[in-house]
Image 1 (cartoon, one colour):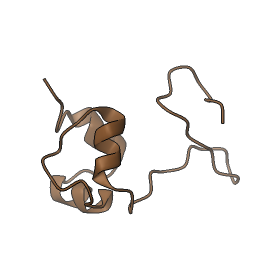
Image 2 (cartoon, helix red, strand yellow):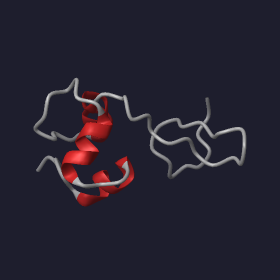
Image 3 (cartoon, one colour):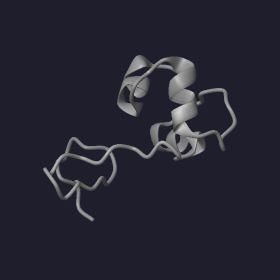
Image 4 (cartoon, helix red, strand yellow):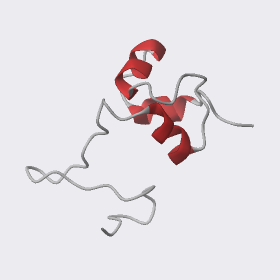
Length: 73
């Protein structure tokens, strides 16, 4: 799968309805995000992303990453 844009991180597919990028699944594990974005959120790696978003008060993974939470120094 090719990237859609050089500025995109990783390979993400688009949905078939309107061509927008698919959202990250809520049942994805936090450990996967920690590896992908070089973060340490201080929670179990098998926690689901939706649980982490509820705990931090963010509505999306993008907002969570941009907030700087878990960023390694």
